[in-house]
Amino acid sequence: MNTHPARGMRDFLPEDVRRRQYVIGVIADVYQRYGFEPLETPAVENIETLLGKYGEEGDKLIFKILKRGEGAEAGEADLALRYDLTVPLARVVAEHRARLPKFFKRYQVQPVWRADRPQKGRFREFFQCDVDAIGSRSMLIEAELLGAAGDVLARLGFADYTLRLNHRGVLAGLLEASGVPEGLQADALTSLDKLDKIGADGVEADLRSRGVPEEGARLLLELFGAVTAARAQATVSPEAVNEDVMARLERLVGHSRPDAVAELRQILTLVAPSAAGRHVRLDPSLARGLSYYTGAIFEIAVPDLAGSLGGGGRYDHLIGMFLGEEVAACGISLGLERILVVMAERHMFPENLGRAAADVMVTVWHPDVVADALRLAAELRSAGLRVEVYPEADKIGRQFKYAASRAIPFVTVVGEDESAKGVVTVKTLDTGEQRIVPRADVASAIVTGRST
Image 1 (spheres, rainbow, N blue to C red):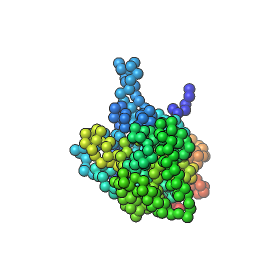
Image 2 (cartoon, helix red, strand yellow):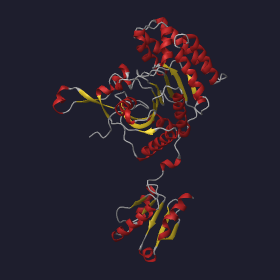
Image 3 (spheres, rainbow, N blue to C red):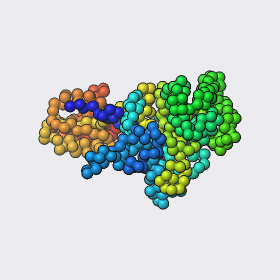
């Protein structure tokens, strides 16, 4: 029988889980420092909750669940696995609006599922780490979200990340200025969102295949090429490049989309004092394919990863699709799986994450001492130590070898002599040192030895 997990899914062994818990712990700690509260939603949503929220491309990737029971033969779906955490959040806000604060700030770390083609850093089941603020249209929200994401990356050890920033209103203005008809603008955004994956030539071909006029495609790509060229100049500071891009945008769309341009400039100003400020780059080519974005959009990039570490933006209309009234909202999502891939390749995890599952192992040399071994283990656990008890009577040498194979640093032995004298032999496996310790002092002796 094939024992591999389903394609695009993975098993997580203890070392994997420890790494995941470490990253999630950092993310949760940073978000809590910004005043965000935890939220969880079901893995399964009604299919109508999800369909029509992600654009044509996104809807194709939804994992649908066929009807059950009498309706199973129809081959129809009424439920679906969660595609992201944003649409479920919108549903929650609509459902529980009266119980939530005026400004609801939540973070959520849960798995999502997409019927995508698996590749490096891309899976069909993966965790998202979302942080969203509901109820305010202030650009302070965007600045805080970028600041929080930057703090997470800095805590994890990233120094070379880029926070790409754009605005859907600016994009719409650029499409209009380039002569792209309104009916083709959604298709054009889908193409532009692939720029970092298929390059300018690929995007140009894709734009043409979607019916975008040749001149419009050329003008768009010329603008994006000029920005890329300016950014590649080592002598030009990021702040100068951002200012140059802002000047270009003001000339091209400042008259048709003044609010969008002003919001971009305000975000740059507000995020500048934070540690993340120096990592923000205006990028007019950034599109973000999801159709629910209405304002600023952002994406996190690192040099050695095709694709992004995360992204997000403002989506002021999404909750209104459930609630019947417009509610301001903005959020950013970190891709846990991609962060883990990059951190593993760069050897960024702390060394102690690979520590043993236990601090000490209690040996069992005879069946008659099992009860006392369990009592000793309970005493050590009550002192805060992680304790494994060897599960059966065996030769002490074999038990030492087992503890060494598990990287457990200390082993205790209570033989007949030790039991009679009320002492315990504590062996340090790394050095082979053995100490006779009064039973009441075993825990403190291990703690002391662990810290040296």
